[in-house]
Amino acid sequence: MKQNTQINGNDLIALGYPETALLGIALKINKKRTGLTKVEMLAHYKMVLTQAEDYINHNVFGKLATAIIEGVGQHVEEEVIPLREEAVGYSVYGSDYIEEGAIRQMETAVKLPVAVAGALMPDAHQGYGLPIGGVLATENAVIPYGVGVDIGCRMALSIFDIKGIEFYGMEALLKEQLVKHTKFGAGHGFHGQYKAEHDILDRGEFNLNPFIKNLQDKAWEQLGSSGGGNHFVEWGLMEFMERDEVLNIEKGTYLALLTHSGSRGMGATIAGRYTQIAKEQCKLPYEAKNLAYLDMNSEAGQEYWALMNLAGDYASACHEVIHAKLTQAIGAEVLAKVENHHNFAWKEMYQGKEVIVHRKGATPASKGVMGIIPGSMTAPGFLVRGKGEEEALNSASHGAGRQMSRTQAIKTLKSSDIKAVLSDHGVELIGAGKDEAPMAYKDIHQVMAAQGDLVDVVAMFTPKIVRMADDGSRED
Image (cartoon, rainbow, N blue to C red; front, top):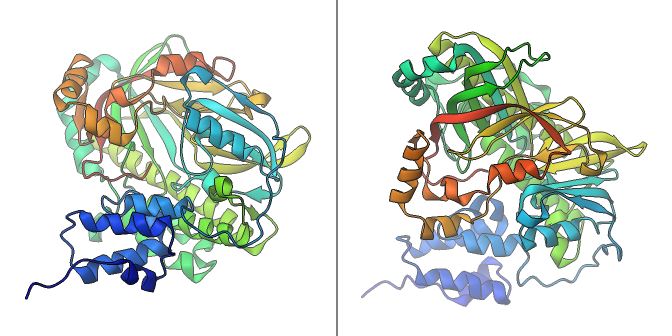
C-alpha cells in the first residue's frame, strides 16, 4: 500500500497553526515537490512556526515564514500600543527613485510613539519593518528590525601602494589569492588549522548569557568569511582626481580591495531572538508589528544593545581578517584604510537631546566622516566624506539600491545578457546569481546626484575582479 505523505489541516493545527489564512498558506506547500518525507515536512512546519526568521529565504518555506513574520492570519487579542495620529517629520532624498512600499513603511515608522525624526535615502527599497535605506531616530528605544537581520553589515576599503596600471600584470595572482582566501554563503566558514584568530573572540559579552555563549564557536568558525546575497570581496581601481590631504594620498589611480559583509550567522541569530522578544513585549498594530522596540532601560534592551555592538565589532573583525590575508598574499603596503557600517544603531545627539539613530542600509555621514558607497558589480563605487546634514540625520545611502526584486531578476534576466554587460565593463565575476546582476540595481550616478547635500565625493572605485556567493545564500 502506498504511504500517505500528504499533510492536512489537522496535522498543522496539532502543531499550533491557527485556523486562519495562515493555515491556507501552509497547506499550499503540500503541492510542491519538496523531496521530503511527511515526518521531515512536519519537522520543518514546526520549526518555521517558532523560528520564522531562519526560514525567510528558504526555497520551500520562505513564503510561509514571511507570512508568519508579517502576522498574516494572527488573531489580535492583546491590547496594542497605538501609533501616533500625526507622524513626526522625515526627509526624503531622491524620491523619484524610491518605490511606494518603502515610503509606506517609513510613514508607519515615524508614527511610532518613540519616533523623534526620520530620513529616507535615495537607494531605499522595501524591507522588514524599517525600509532598507531608512533612518529613524527614537527616544530611549531600540528596534531590532530597525537595525536589520545582518547586524553591523559594513564596507571596508584598503588602498595599496600599487599604481593602477600595474593591475593588468597582476590579474592572475589577484584572482588566485581571492579564491584562496575567501569563503561565502550562509553556513559556510573555516575549520581546523584554517580558522583565524582575533581578540573579538575573547570579548566578555560572550559570557553575558547562555544564548550568546552558544554562538561563540560558530562565530570563530565563520570569522573572516563573507555572507551571501549582495556581499562581496573585490579587487578594483581607486581613482583620486586630486590629492586628499586627510588620507595623504596623491592624485592618481591605485589598486584597492573592497569588501561588503556583516556579522554572519551570529548576527542573524541575535536579530531573530531579540526581534521575537520585542514583539512579545511591545504589541503594535498589524502594519507596525516588525517595528517592535525594546526599552533601553529594560533587561532585554540592555542585552540587545550589548550584543548588537558585539556583532558590529565581529563584522569589523571579519573584514580585518580578509584584508590582512589578501594584503599579505600580494605583498603590498596599505596607504589607507576606510571602513563604515550600516545596519546598526548609534547613540547620537539630535536637536540637543540624546536619541537612538537606526541606520538600516544607510551610511553614517557626520561632518568629515568617511564612508564607501558601492554601485554594483559593474558600476563604480564612491569614497565619500560626510557633510553632517542634520535633516538627513547625518546619513547617506549605502549603495545604489535595488530597482528589481530578486525573484524578478531571476525570472526575467538572461545569463547571456549579464555576461555581455560584464564583458563590456571588463569585469571578471566569480560566483553570484542572476539576482545580483548589474541591471537589478538603480543607477548609482542618479543616487549620488540625489545626495549631493549629504556627502562630498573623494575618489571613485571601479570593480575589476568580483567574488560573491554562488550557492543561493542571501544574508544581506
